[in-house]
Image (cartoon, rainbow, N blue to C red; front, side):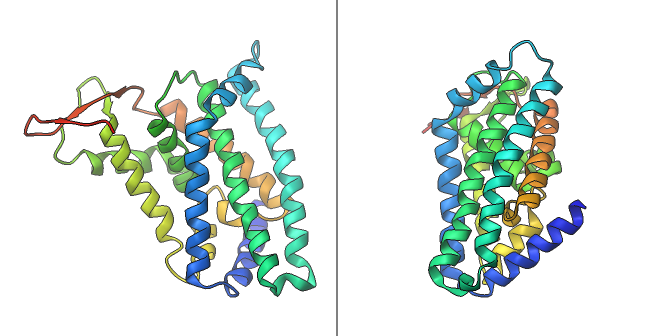
Length: 252
């Protein structure tokens, strides 16, 4: 059922992308990144409150309750977006932009989901850059989020020293975020960008249309985020980093 739903969603996205140019595709990708930035910077406290509101439950119970609640919410909005896309006027520019804007809104809500699961896992007072890295990793790499995040960190670590205790310099996280952001933007680099992201992102962000698709996407995201935080190798961030020449690097 899941594969069939994602196939239908990708077909829907293909039809929309054929009506868009690369500039519009890039604008949507940029808006998605801006939304991730906003979630990372401003919604951590709300995520902690949601996690604390389920006090007394076991972690799997908390994640299940959270997932079911958000899946129902986003299924409803996805169904509305799917209905709008199926309307005879879908070919108009205004309808296309409005429908694809749902992808950006969906990104913000699933960013809230990722951060809430982080809080449920007991992650304490992460920096904005660390929160951004978490959201990007889960959205881009899905079930391979840990490996994808590790690759980005390893690439960002070239020429720098990392503490043996597993602490990752904040400047390394910032560089890893730039790498992951470019990976997201590259999927919008051509006229077929939105279709590409629908296939590339295991979470189905690019296919966040239709009630069934949104429901399945949220459940997959929650499962991937749970696995990511359960196995996340980097649990602490240094305020500064030192490159191999011994110079102090700014955290800004």
